[in-house]
Amino acid sequence: MLKGRARTIRVEVKLNPKEYKKLKSDCKRSGFTKSTYLRKLICKQVIKEKPDEEFFFLLTELYNIGREMENVFYKADYLNFIDKDYYKEEAKKWNSLMDLIKKEYL
Image (cartoon, rainbow, N blue to C red):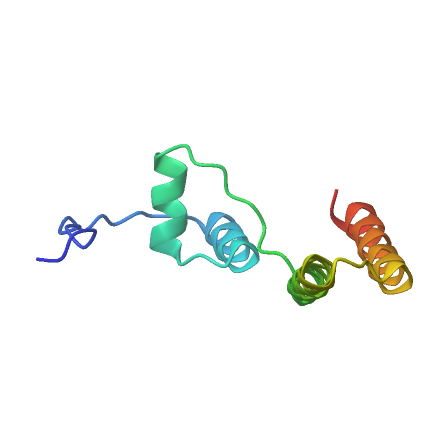
């Protein structure tokens, strides 16, 4: 048997329609299956709502800006010269994106 797949005990839970509707809604918002959701509740793990697509887009943008800034550092190290204008532009992008993320998600 694979590690992590040692769950052999099946549990049946009876819910009223209101409770079941809430369970389905919570599972959909979290992105977890009912089983995973209930196991996390039992283990007292914090269940957070799954971020929306814009959040993942913003993470990708942060990653891309970070890569561009890394390229600036490599270029500066190799040439012993910093392209200040390009660096400032990338830093502006980074800061504005961070402000947007803080406004939307924090």
